[in-house]
Image: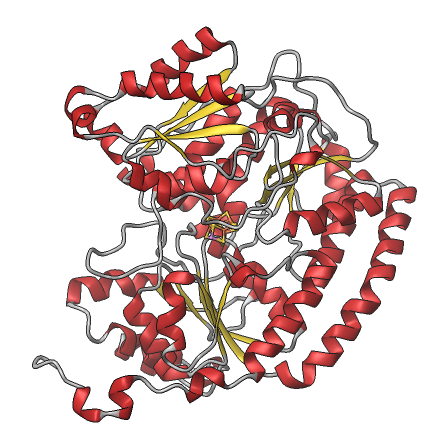
Length: 554
Ligand code: CFM
């Protein structure tokens, strides 16, 4: 690595006057050679060519055992992320109680039960089959049937979903046949997800499995075309800290009808009807692009990428929707709403900017926020030194143009790719090729996402599946003004004297989406980067050096 660094022209190094290749070499220096070779592919110095090409980054590969990473499991991505926020499905975890207990309300996806007539909300409950040794040895299907029956008797839900955890896959319980049997018996929708924790390399596998399951078992069950002229779905928005509520407020103001959200503040009936909308908007590309692709193939509604994180990004996304429908009334309304909302945003931004300008942030989150939140930091005049996803794929980094070149490895092959064909009766292309070409010529991109890297400056460090060791090193080297990650990283980072903003749970704050969310975020970040509280703290061994020690091998 160090060799390559010497050949790099120095003008590329724009960030913080440090040579990123040297930083990279430092991050890798202590790893055994095999680990260093693997990690070297996942630590990339950004360089965007004039035609938008970026370097290849290693991603969606197994974490090296022994490295402390940030990732979750397949079950987390399926049950927790995609299905978890739907309030009126009873989600039963088939497995030992720990899996259910630790996934119980730990994500801040909010919901409004009053927006569906029956008011069902099962999100506050934790349903588990509580498998014991006996079921592991003799099989757990009987207990699963009992659990489904019990959940039905107590709550009379419209639907029950079953999620397989690791032991279920290992002993071979057939959850799908149990679901089919109980569906017939109870007369409600019962469906299962083979989302055993060990499937795939991260929660990303669980997203894919969840997308497949919703598409197979729910989408298309209700063909009623509801009211509204501009009917859309919002995909990949999970209402963390009330984000979806703020976006819903803006749609309502603009006269845009939201048919369904996958899956913040959602209900199963809305999924069943979502194929009747005329446009899919994708917020989080990583977790939900599969459903959008399948809906287009089967039903003919196209998708566009949007981002409601950042005031400018929000305005741009609303304009894209108006542009798609192309009617003057909507275009004017959207402009009027933006004009009304922006002054408060601008005022808040101007107020904080003298203190936030030039401050340096690092973002290591999930599979989309490490990109989206850079918008808000840009608005505040802050610099993103380094960013990366926990489990993003190459397309989330480099853009969908690389999709044909992504090698499918054994871990990805393990996840079912369902074959979808145009529905003989219900396939209805929402716009024809000529209209599409016209809109594309005006700059509206369909079915595309450019990824994170093309929007980041040359020389910034893009790091996939960041480890705890690398986190410590980055902080020591750069001493950023703010580190953005999650609860697992929070306290370790604060012990370095650096504030950490949780971009998963928002540290109990939010919303941060839309215009009101941007204002919230500006104030929150201003408070964090202007306070020096963490740098005043001393660890016990810093105050009393006799407590410190060195390892012999250092
Ligand atoms: Fe999508 Fe998410 Fe994210 Fe994600 Fe997540 Fe999340 Fe996330 Mo935590 S769906 S990829 S699996 S935007 S729970 S709401 S914050 S890691 S960046």
